[in-house]
Image (cartoon, rainbow, N blue to C red; front, top):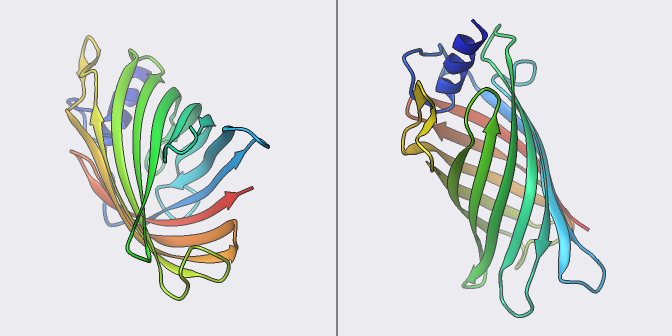
Length: 231
């Protein structure tokens, strides 16, 4: 029975199986997030990460708890930052389902910032993940995210700057067979986001907006509230 419930829940995250999860696509969810990054003094190395609580509704129905931290390396005059890190994920079922699935993940990524014109701040993020979800074989996933921030009342993302924030991220599965009876599709999911941000300080920004997440099985809107901290 536990394995059947596991397969049902995983199908909600884009896995193809014979079972379907009844997810209310009209119910608005919410993600609460803290992002941070810092460099070690006089070094090309640093750390970055994000801690997130994701809810199927606006707070009480846990979708995921995600804790992710990585070591960064920024080569001199290269315009790119590399990261290798680890993430712990605890995923809950929709509604009254009290199942809890644990995932351990290792990831590698490259961040490439780009500025277009005077106000368009772009960041390209390429991420490769190795995922260990309980009771399933190890699997991998490829991700590409394009972030765009556009200050509206200031020339940069500084203190008191109001800015438009957009991103789109696509997820592609690597290994298709995750056990003898379960396979995943090539396309895993897509996320499209539109929001507004405000510079509390030069190194601290508050952001909120709306994100649409689409998988092969469902599509659902999420409010996002995030704090972005550089120190």
